Length: 234
Image (tube, rainbow, N blue to C red; front, side):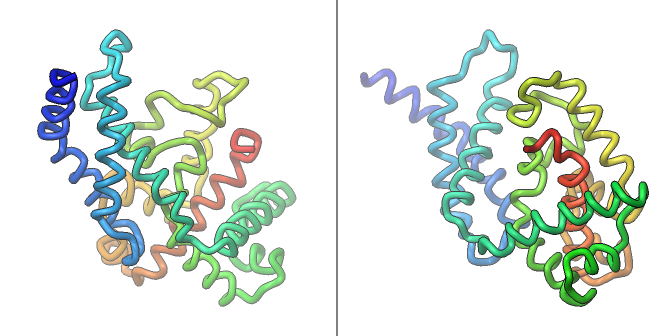
C-alpha cells in the first residue's frame, strides 16, 4: 500500500507541470468566470486515473496518454459545470441546421444573410448569436469527437465516438475535406487558432478585424463543419 501511494506521489510530482501547462493553455480560450485552479484540480484527478490505467503495451508514452486523460478530465469538469446557457447551445444547433439546408439547396457556402434569413432574424442578431456562441468554444472540435490538436496534426490520431460503425480513415477524410472546403477566412482563423495557437486578439491583428469578429468567424466555421459532418456526429 505504501509503495503504491509512493508511486502515485511520484507521478503527481513529476507530471504536475504538465497538468498546469494544459490548464493554462485551456484557460486562455475560456470565459473569465472559469478558474484555472478548478481545471488544475480536475487535471490532477485525470493524471491519477492515467497512472492507474496506463498500459505501456499500447505503444503510447505515458506523457502522451496522460496528456489526453488530463485534458479530458478538464473538459468533463467544464461540461458538468454547465457554464454555457442552453440557449447558446440551441442557437448553435439551429445555425448548423440552417447552414446545412442552405448549402444543400445552393451547392455553395451559405452566406451570412442567407443564414440570418433562414433563422428568421436580422443580420445583426445573427452576428450576436455567433458572438455568444464563441463563449462555448470548448465544444468546438470536441463536438466533432476531436480535441483541438486534431487540426494542427492534420486530423491524425485515434478518434472516438462519431465514427462508430464507420472506418476511422473515412471519418478523417470527411473532416479533412470539410475543413478544406471552408471559406478562406474561416480556414485561416482555424489554422491560426489551432495550429499557430494565436489568441483571438492576435488573430484579429493578422486579419485587421476586431476580436469579436474573430469570435464570430470561428463560431461560424465550427457551425459549418458541424453542418457538413452531421451524418458523422449524430
